[in-house]
Image 1 (spheres, helix red, strand yellow):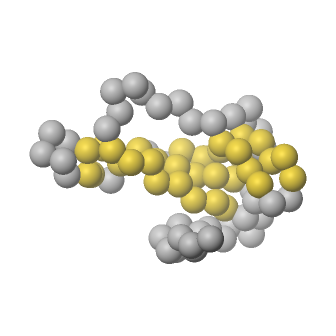
Image 2 (cartoon, rainbow, N blue to C red):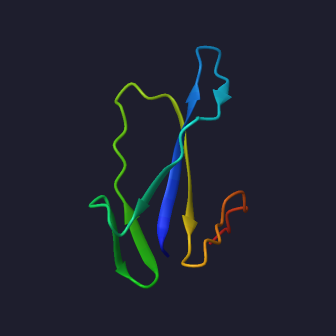
Length: 75
């Protein structure tokens, strides 16, 4: 895994979630990103205490492939 990308989708007062405009990317050069081994990655994301909505995130591999918009697997 080369990076983790994420964005904040904000929920308005009516409960409707709107897609965020900014996509953040964490890589090996960022102190908030680490890879303990070949199978795990850790991203530390600062969240405003008043944040309402959801955080959308996806992985990027070394060939720039992503798992964005893929369904989660049940384990």
